[in-house]
Length: 253
Ligand code: G3P
Ligand code: MG
Image 1 (cartoon, rainbow, N blue to C red):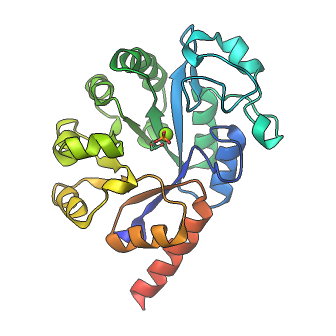
Image 2: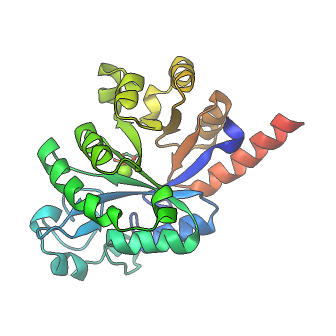
């Protein structure tokens, strides 16, 4: 399946630009990514914003919890401060518009600190996605470590394509394939430490794609291609573009 491997720019091209910003997303598509991955949370009044951590401390010039901060305050922050490149924290709406304009695809990761937090954010995501065009809807793959929130969204939006996301620790304690099938997911998203040939084989028997996070080193990318994964998340998507092309050329010769 490697010739069709999908390249997901992790948090945008975060190896080259401030993560989860419109700059990182644009750059990802410039570098040849098929899709961007980004993390969605809510502000104190329920605006959907794109940021990874539960606080703004690491990635911006501010301090505090995202879900306790009003949107106007989040918008005053510089999410590119570590790169000396001013950037806003994007909204989900801005991010969807960028992906739509670029003709790409996306993995929307619902990020939450608990099951309850995830369900609260899921309810807002439901209304945000419900009003989108059919074409854009088809380009969204939603995932979360909070699988109950994924199940809830899938029950509300049956057209939504979903993936079951697993940390290294979660994956060892669960049967990832069964959990994904219960969710009516199209894919499992295992941490790279969980990826073994038998997992690939079992997932493929059941028609599930296997999208692996996160591979940045070229030998690692080559190993995943040889294993036959279906998607690779990378902070440096251009490396996957190059390795995918080389792999396909070798495969067809
Ligand atoms: O969705 C894949 C990956 O992004 C999960 O880990 O912590 O980078 O959001 P994290
Ligand atoms: Mg993520």
